[in-house]
Image (cartoon, rainbow, N blue to C red):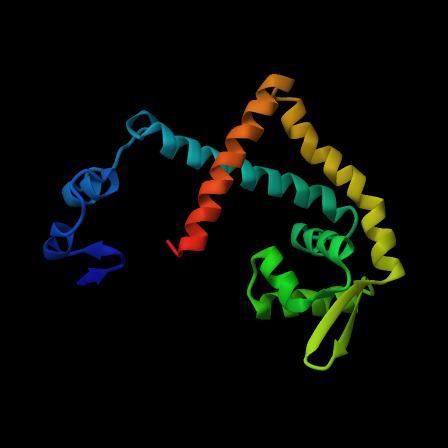
Length: 181
């Protein structure tokens, strides 16, 4: 494939499906300039991504009051739910690389929030009393903060509908991941 920064040659583009909207835009160089030119599913995906980014920024500001990052909060919550947890399982649950998990665990251990115990070739992670206390101090407030984003914008029926639709989307994305797509 002849590409330069993601641009495909004419020969490469001949193999693309003709009904693929993104391929059409690439073939003709016509990227839509307004949201109304995108398919509804694309706009929904972009809005979901934006919502998650906004939610993470809101959480980041809130969690900074407890000297935690969003990733550290998620790690501590996962450890509490599954302790002792292996470092590999923690990495998989947080969808980070083993190296990224190791660096985060190092920082959490240095902060006195977790302990790491080596058993044979496996490292097991548990919360320290300080880690448990810090998580208990922030957990309810963090969950309430995230819930308020939905409760203040959506009525009960809309929340149920969104939950049902998100379950379907999650199921489809899980299916594709399991197929290796």
